[in-house]
Image 1 (cartoon, protein in one colour):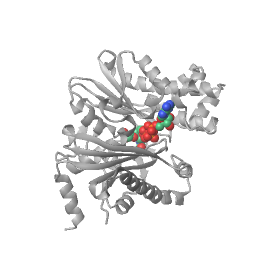
Image 2 (cartoon, protein in one colour):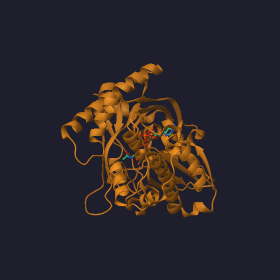
Image 3 (cartoon, rainbow, N blue to C red):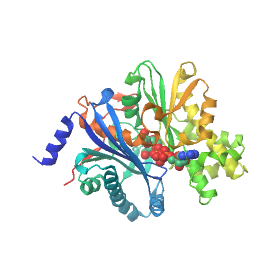
Image 4 (tube, rainbow, N blue to C red):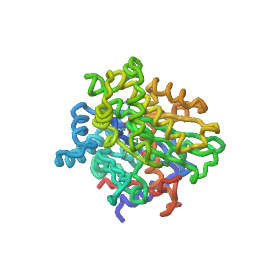
Length: 398
Ligand SMILES: Nc1ncnc2c1ncn2[C@@H]1O[C@H](COP(=O)(O)OP(=O)(O)OP(=O)(O)O)[C@@H](O)[C@H]1O
Ligand SMILES: CC(=O)N[C@H]1[C@@H]2OC[C@@H](O2)[C@@H](O)[C@@H]1O[C@H](C)C(=O)O
């Protein structure tokens, strides 16, 4: 037997496993690494976040990714190069992080690598299949680190009838559901998404969807109009502006917001070209800070409307809203969410025992743990509307 297959088998039999989760999201700010110790799986999962950090990408690397990211036309050779280049950089970040944490690669049982999304293409009409593309190949990471690597988690979700996103539902349900308490786990990254976990803890009652833009339009607008700024830190710019209600209403009328749940989206749809088109078509004239105030409101309102429409009962029940992702650090956005949803108790996900900035990397580590451990896998299992499968491809180091 290939000794690496024997090693995989042994890892799946250990009482606990050390898995390094990697996530680099749509904000392209860098790589989140979360070293997690898991025991159990499914609703019996126990996780300890042993170490975590975010390593910022060098500016020229961010720029190279932006050249192909969510673009209709690209320099195709660059995409091929980036597939290897991202993996090599991630492998280097892994080795550097492990060294700084005093942990050897031999101690790590597996890596769970999300990769960099460069295209996400749910098709809501026509005959073409949904598709999504994450690059930063897992074989390179496995070989360069010597650690078994699981990657490319979204493909089987699509094969099973999902849209490849959001996948946070697995971790949200296994780690954060609580019998007797209705909870919404909201992540505000580039795109917003939430998982509703009913007090019943029944997987049939789960609702999970993207909501629209989180920070992606805000960040892109800041980069374009305020040279040297990457995002609206502490909403200092948006707070100087005045809400432009006609623009807000026009944006909330966009087709994405009328589509049925569950749905997923990305910067392929929510980008500055779309914003400019809406502004120009309607002949609106507004200052950059007014635009930022309005985009902040768009994020707060689109999230709130999605919760009200997809989970009508939340108007009348006690429900905790637990927020993670970079958007949870935006004080104006958090203020607006609390104001629009006075019936909900709003808190940050740190209060659940996992640092907000590490949550997504932990969730991918958890997906790898499930793929290694879940002994109930079946073709037709579902978490709400989401297929419940073992996700990710396994790369052996040698
Ligand atoms: N202090 C702050 N004030 C305002 N906004 C903030 C603050 N801190 C972070 N953010 C926002 O969060 C963004 C980073 O979010 P995050 O790290 O969740 O993105 P991501 O991991 O790329 O997201 P995803 O993968 O979910 O799309 C920043 O670009 C910024 O918009
Ligand atoms: C295709 C893709 O990378 N989608 C991301 C993105 O960032 C937020 C939102 O859009 C979500 O759908 C997803 O990531 C999280 C981790 C998810 O799958 O749950």
